[in-house]
Image (cartoon, rainbow, N blue to C red):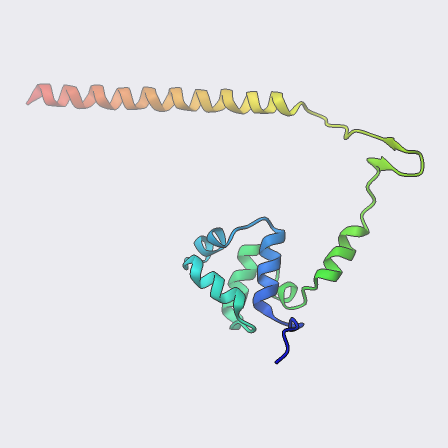
Length: 139
């Protein structure tokens, strides 16, 4: 009995794509409306029914064909073709990413928006409480 990985093991391909997408089994399960254990079993299956495979592909943000034709070696080669100019070995220089915004400012901006939202929600809740208290006083 051979322990070699079957080249077209759909479940393993789904597992690897899910991992590359940074998704946990629980998240995939939730999106598919099934249990985490079902996802685990699916990832252990050599073949998966077409309609189910299409649904999994949709959730993973790829096509059914992308899952069927997935190859880790091709994926690595694909990413190795990108030119990253942030580091140059020939000159030994490092160029920092030129951010067009300050990430800290964005965080502060978002927290201010969240604070405003909470204030509005709190005001709405106070208004509801006031209205309900008036209703109780009438009776």
